[in-house]
Length: 259
Image (tube, rainbow, N blue to C red; front, side, top):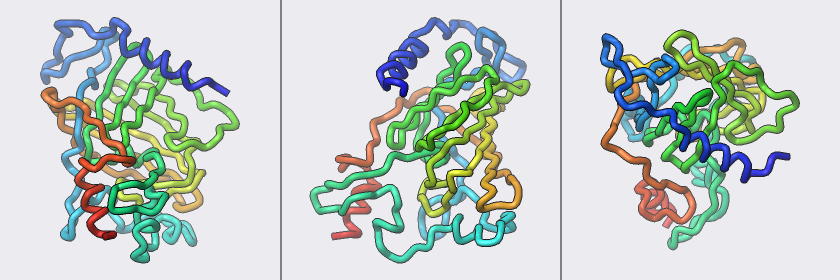
């Protein structure tokens, strides 16, 4: 078993490595490149193109014409019953008026599909993504390596990547059964397989596509997006934890509903 301190130390070394170059050359579209010639994806981004729902909240996926396998639609859609702990699956323990409760970590792709900010770092050989929502971090090797064998399912799974021209392609498997969107109302099984595609499209824009493949739910892979992500160089990632975070408007609203 890998010691968590080793991973933390490795991440620190990567982020401190001399990979940022002042005065990187720009393309004709004003897009800077990394020292090894890749389009620069670094910075604080937010997904600005999720569809707003009439009753509040955001929609990430179209519910129409998805290629469901027999019984798959029941696995994909969480059957809401009015119980806040069932309808909000990342809440574990009872909520009280003081704001004390426990939470499951946000996994993948739930973190990537959050409306919160996320910061990309591009040290040599890796893509590192820090999510403001629940403060999760993914350290993704981009050298084209294969997945490990006999993976133990985890919340974020195992992600490996490569570049296809100017597009960063990330392949993720080894996930615990869990949420497929920000609300947790769509689900995936441990057989889920996701592919992300990130392409810098302009000085302040990036395209994001997600391919979903879960043979226990769907008969074939399907694509969602592309969504547009906006660069915010003036932003910094804030602390956003589910536990003991009474300044989070979502938590405050939730507590009011259970009083």
